[in-house]
Amino acid sequence: MSIKNNLLEIKSTLPENVTLVAVSKTKPVSDLMEAYEAGQRIFGENKIQEMAEKFEQMPKDIEWHMIGHVQTNKVKFMAPFVSLIHGVDSLKLLEEINKQALKYNRIIDCLLQIHIAEEETKFGLNEEELNEILKQVEQDKLKNIQIKGLMGMATFTENQDQIKKEFLHLKSIFDKLKTNTPQLTTLSMGMSGDYQLAIECGSTMVRIGSSIFGTR
Ligand SMILES: *Cc1c(COP(=O)(O)O)cnc(C)c1O
Image 1 (cartoon, protein in one colour):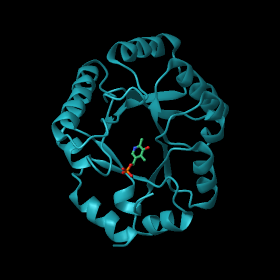
Image 2 (cartoon, helix red, strand yellow; image 1 turned 135 degrees about the vertical axis):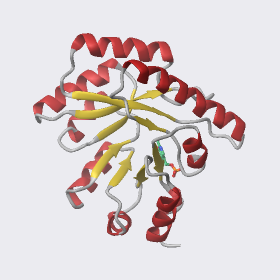
Image 3 (tube, rainbow, N blue to C red; image 1 turned 30 degrees about the vertical axis):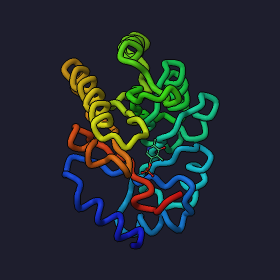
Image 4 (cartoon, protein in one colour; image 1 turned 60 degrees about the vertical axis):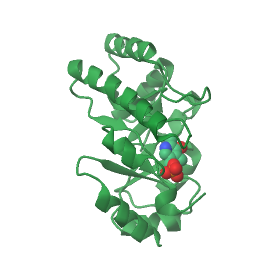
């Protein structure tokens, strides 16, 4: 299967309200261009340096999403062009994004990452920390960021029941927040192995890499 065929096949199965982020990390620009030529305009990368290099080389109507963990001191390298940062998990990071966005007179969209997996190693906030950050954001009046929703990653396991439980947990946090903050529109959950389940559980944005571009 070609990248184009993989992409079109996945897109044909996605409900209209679900956005596809094509996760192109480690892949060469020629692979991304194949997806671009098949109509894809949203690409996800997990390293700022790599994303910045690809941004330079590729057409300028692409939306670049940062899906990896972000170090505060690297925000400045993506602030001129990034359109959505998925993995925000501290107030300090939000403040830095706000500061860098201001320099470029931009408003940068962000998702707050929630820890839903069993594994200790996955980044993210618990519900209490999430509420604390949202409160702080309101008080600080950070004008150059906009929180659009939440992101999460399920445990790396074959156990579908467990993955489902974790996705539904994230969805319930999202729904609770939305009652007070209707501008939250985005729930980023689901990757190649679990995106169908994620959509069943209410995902509005899936991040798919290997099923489009092949294994890394
Ligand atoms: C790599 C990555 C993906 C895509 O993973 P695939 O299994 O290749 O679809 C999605 N989300 C994040 C945060 C990633 O780092």
